Image (cartoon, rainbow, N blue to C red):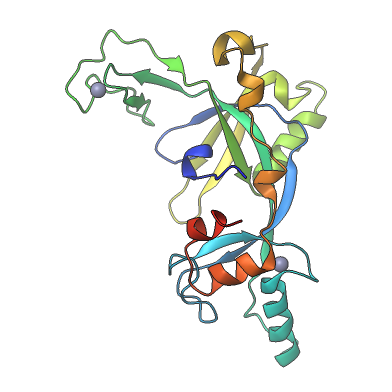
Length: 232
Ligand SMILES: [Zn+2]
Ligand SMILES: [Zn+2]
């Protein structure tokens, strides 16, 4: 199993817009329970950090089992660990960045443009912004999925894989992302990603697969997620 970390997922942030190209017009979907840190039932979950865990289904998922017990004690209990649907896509991060000689990537900060100088001190005035062209996973909820589905069904736009999409994330307490389609244009993947790009795509089924219930219990009871998945 390929062990995924935050580096494998596209970062949507309020600091800058992110441009993506979608590879998978049909994403993989799954249900995810969010266990916040210091939850009263599982205060030590994931070494106390809290975690999102995929649901394996009502009959096998330990978190659904806990919800069931809550409802047995109080039919109207609001004290539940609900799940939400997540959709997983392979994407190319096409966000324009300045790449400094030191390797740092500098983003176009919302409203401020690109900085003239990198943190390392090298000037970036003569550096041309280029798309990152990095294959990543995007795992997001229904509000983003619905926007993409609407594009797909709109005859003026057509398949979501045929144009870049700007992900504009805004808000302070309530953060939301608006998807803005760009003009249709084809990308020569061999050229921009390298000829082995096909083999570097993620297995979206695997990236949305629930852990077995024993592993889920270990994490709920305090083991660190990464300690558990190296044993799976
Ligand atoms: Zn569940
Ligand atoms: Zn630098």
